[in-house]
Amino acid sequence: MDNKKWAPSKEENLGIITCIYEFIKEELSELQEETGCPDSFIYDFIGKIQNEWHPESCHSIVRNKKKKN
Image (cartoon, rainbow, N blue to C red; front, side):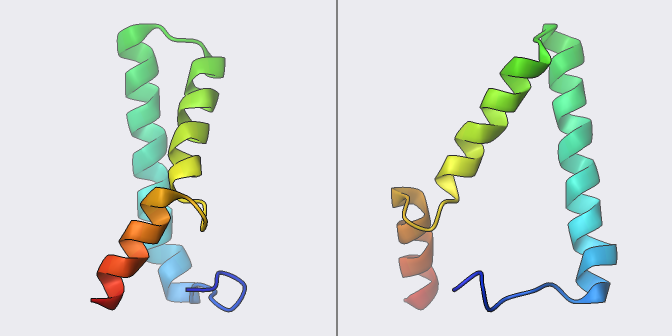
């Protein structure tokens, strides 16, 4: 899916997207509280996850092939 053509609806933004955003933030805060890791670790951690969702990453290519089959 070409991300330049897709945009969330207002309902998606106010619903599932906001819910997931808040959930991720809460989970990262819990990770930080339990481990005492610095913000820089969380930042790098998120970056590693972000890389898996890059359109040209192996993870993204496999996900998109699964969707087509």
